[in-house]
Image (tube, rainbow, N blue to C red; front, side, top):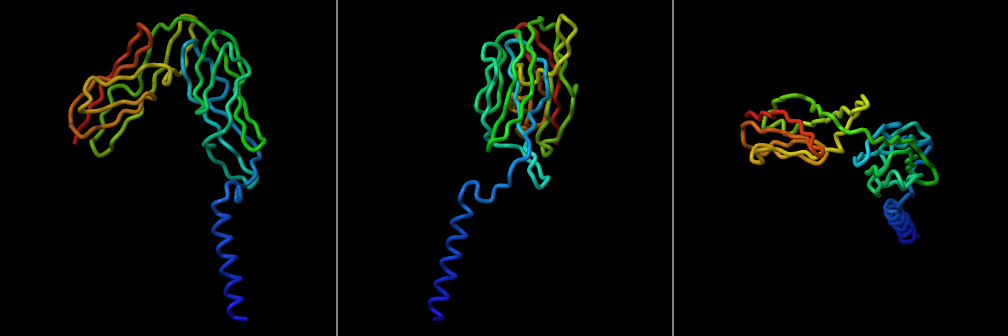
Length: 200
């Protein structure tokens, strides 16, 4: 009798561990999905990273790792499986993120005004080697007076890769050597620069 009882509990424990690995077994239902940035205005030829965040029925929130991304107008905007949108032509499109039957969306407006200048922020920052990184952003001024965030639509570069590298999204990372490097944001023929100082 004791052996049967032990076997019974061992089986239940085994099934519990197995179920922990079952995808969706412990998932809390999603109440709503929010897509950010909300209602952005973008220029043709630019890229923008979108993020989908879920609010669950218990009130908790979290960023969705792999929702299904779609666009209502592929003629003006394309979006890949990672949520990176590429603008193609002037117009508007609704971007949607879906998971477990719940969908969130935002409307994107695409215009074609030429870029006049770029401003990098922060200007001339200083970080320590141990601090490790500095996030830069780029703001674009267009000929129609539009001012918008184009951080993900410019090409970032660092003049001295032994001091700091910089990612496609403007995140500069100290390599380990102290010194100064020039950070540039480029779009076509428009270039902006600032100085990043790394100290010990």
